[in-house]
Image 1: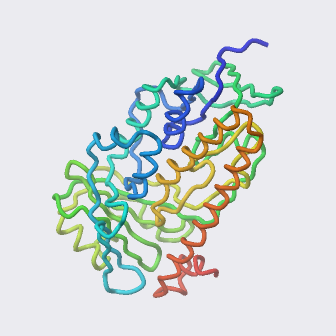
Image 2: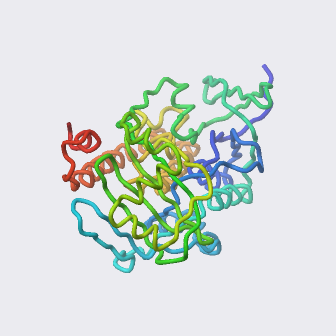
Length: 366
């Protein structure tokens, strides 16, 4: 049977985790990336524009710190919250040993990561969708659909960076557990330049987030469970904004910024989820494909970079002949997932004003 392409590593997905993994592996291995999106085509708007200060250490280890700084993303000066009571709580970035985090232009950040990988030698096939996966001795044979035609790819190791869909892990029979029903309704729009701070505010049916974006823009997001009435009531932009304006504290920030949405409301999954095993013989999952984080944790992009870095290290150790390198990666990610669960329960546990309401009782063990 003929093979159209051969690589040491095939990465399925070119989001933040996939792009970071290929940037790390391309200088040492023949690395091929399969991306469902057409190369160069505009990508849909994404929510998740905050990068925590701890990412500084990861970017240094990845050899990307200076290049990231040159991108000029705006620093985050701090965070304010209305959580657990009516009085706001503020945290300033100057108290963080890592310094400030960043308000990202998310689209530009992801394009930058993909460009870094390309400069380091990663090859791209796009658009391409995984259609089949089979073990072949010490490697893999992938069947890929491109423009409706099959393409065969041989690889030694496959990296699942396919986001919440986890295409590789699912094809291998791994079980993905969804821990809740959280969704996000969001708006992008314009607002006057002001303090570069994030704001989180709890309410009876969920919680809100708003933050400034580059070029005088702002994001507003509401998080609730998909089966609750609030999810239906906030599906349209006017209703979402009207509900936000009824929230004490949050309304003041939106009014001060003169926030004006410039498009329809977006919606995306925001639930916590994980694969029962994030790595096995000749494969591993990174980013959301391995562990999808609740946005309250601010860990989504950080986990993408961390899992890409540690996953790439495990791949290189495997290629060098270390038999349990992928097992080490799997156990390390299990520890990360355990710490994430503990911290998330603690944060939700701080809000008790609506303990009898479905959204909150579910997160308090009800």
